[in-house]
Image 1 (cartoon, rainbow, N blue to C red):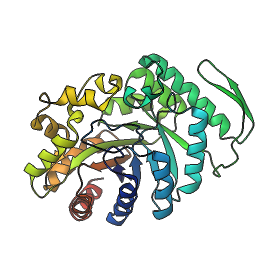
Image 2 (image 1 turned 180 degrees about the vertical axis):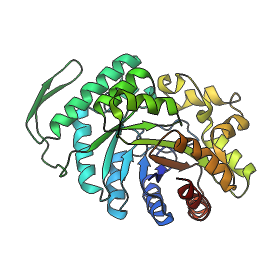
Image 3 (image 1 turned 120 degrees about the horizontal axis):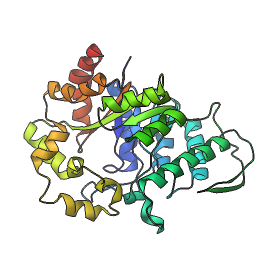
Image 4 (image 1 turned 45 degrees about the horizontal axis):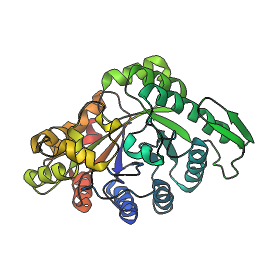
Length: 321
C-alpha cells in the first residue's frame, strides 16, 4: 500500500517550526517524513537552513513517524565517516525508524569548504565510495580505509542502532540509477519518472522501495497560492544543470528574477484550495510505481494545509492507492 508522507523544507523554516510541523503532519494522518539537508537555502526569500541532524533528533523524540533525509550529500561538506556517525545516532533517536537518503549534491551547499566542485561522474564515484565507508563503520568494527577519495584511520562507531540504517539514493541518469539499483536499499525521485523507476528495477532494484516528492501550495485562493509559490520557490521552474552548479542563493535569484513567471511556477507546483488539483499532481507518482509520496507545503500556512489534506486530499489519495 502506498504511504503518503510530509516533506519538511529546511530551506523555509527554522528548527523549532520544523519540529512543530512534524507533529502536525502526524496529527493530520501522514505516514512518514522527509527532511531536506542544506547549508544554504536556494534563495534568500526562503530564509532558513538549520543543521538537519539536530532537527532529526528532536523530531525523533516528539513523533512516532519514520524520517528520511531528502537528501544528504556525504561526499564533500561532511566526510562520510561523520555522516555515518550522524545517521547511526539518528537511527537510535528516531522512534519510527530512520533512512539515510543520499545524493551527489549541489554546489550551493558543498562548495563552502573551498574545494573545487567535481563533475557529475566524479561525484558519483565519490558517492559509491562514501557508501562503502559508511557501511563498514555501521558494522561497529574498527575501520581503516584507504580509497581513491577518502581515508579513514582506525575509526569505530560505538553508538549504533540494532540494524544498520537503510540507504536510499537520489538518482536521475542511467549510471546513477545503476549505482542505486546495485548499492542502495531504495530509490528517491523528485519527479514522477516512470522510465527511471522501471530502469532502477530492471538494473537490480526490483523489490526495493521507491520514494517520490513534490511541492504544493495550499491557500484559501488559487491567486494567493500562486503568489506565495512564485515568491518562495521560483527555482522549481529551473531545468538543466544550473541547480547543481550555482554556488550561492543570489545566483538563483539572478537566474529567476524576471525570467521565471508566476505561471511557470504554477505549472510545477499545484496551487490553491481545490483538492482535485492536488490529487492530480500526486497521481502521476502513483502511476509511475512510487511506493511513498512526500508532499511539501510551500509558505507559512501549515495549519491550513494540514487540515485541508486531512479532510480533503489524503482520503482521496488512499481511495485511489
